Length: 602
Image (tube, rainbow, N blue to C red; front, side, top):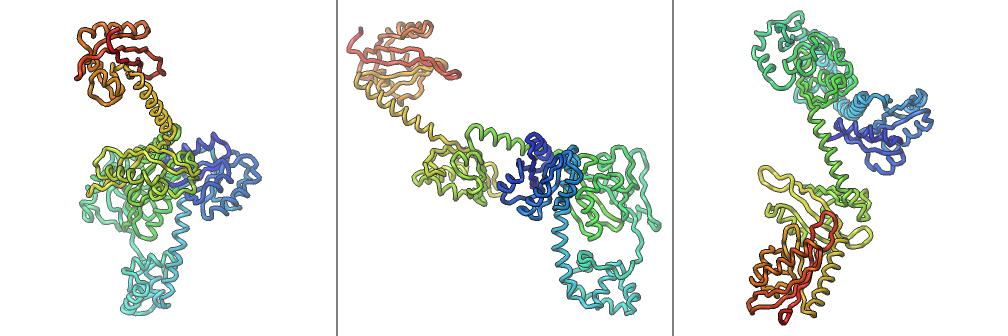
């Protein structure tokens, strides 16, 4: 899921530049020209607010307070474009989370991730801490002391010596403590104590564990950083090295002081950049990462002794990583892989979808995306506005759309959708009347296609398509049909028929009267080959008729020819009249004319 970023900047060019940069790095920016527009448009904001400021910006604190009052709990970052230090400090005092120099886009990503991390951590930590404190309140004083001993890393015997009781009594209090806390294991109880902020009973005696695998570095023999009581690696985990070196993921190990103790080959090739990082502190080797979500997550995994997974942007390498961290006796084991190309691909997909949406909006077509499981349909904002609906007030659901389709058209629309969902038609296609926001019926042409099906059942899950208002086209078609009908009636009264020759593909179309004159069995105005017309002309008259046709095409003069046709009821004399007509650029060249049935040759 892409993180929403609310970009507020009065400078149109800078606003567009910032939005593009955020999209490129996988965020979902929503641009606004002012705080007022943000408050008015964004009813349920999420993510982070970027508020641009420049010069003195004396009203900056007021703008920050207004954002916080309308969107409480949302981190507000000040993007400084030469803003004064006094204004920046005043904005932070008003509630802004941080201030970042707008001239450094890379710093912007780091500050955003830091704000998101701190916000999520604060929300989660407060809830967890309150729950943990409530559960620890159930313990007796002695049970709390036993738990404090466990937090300090003491064994049952060490706790017993410290409290001057027997180990058996410690075991009894420990079992009762786990029952009161509803904890299945001591590790779970220790985690609750750490979250609640419980202090350890005393410093525990412990021996540092050794690294789990040897270090890897090009052109060097494997070695490891050993703690004072390290045992030979081969006697401990003889197969771990092969596993770590064989995985396609990058792997490194950290000791309890956050120092690198091992890299597999993939990790060296991905992040070392030719440096020998063995024994170096991770935050010294990658200082930019200290300000990212990775810093908090690695320390959380170490303190709570639980595995974690997260994604973050590493500013020193300018890359995105998917990270899985797991506590081990010597410190932390970190698996990671480079997500940069995937994030760029997702960002490019979003840009492509946005370009498609803009193209559809420009053409008058409206894109829609229907989730068949939930019934939610995402409709083009501009298309809704063309139908005089406020996109913010519309309930974007299939039921809402159906409620506005004309009752006479709805059964046909539902049948067309059902046929396509059952894979009986290659696509969904329907014309129907839709009630717009002004209470008027508009003709809509919908086209769509299923793009996602359940792998096991084949059931359609998602269908996307476009809608177009074709009311004007339908009106023009009705007027054309009416005009043609009047023309045919006039022609029938005069004993005439109409025909139309496409000069590009040499296909000819006849009205019903012309078809009858030529004895051709076909639907009116169906495209027929020129050969079909030639076959209907008497062989003795055909050469002269064809010469007259070609001469008219070359000279632009009127086509005029007398010829006999052969029909089931005998020969008929026809007078053919036609002329080449001018057409719009890109349209087929045409010749249109009349056929008059004669009593004899002229």
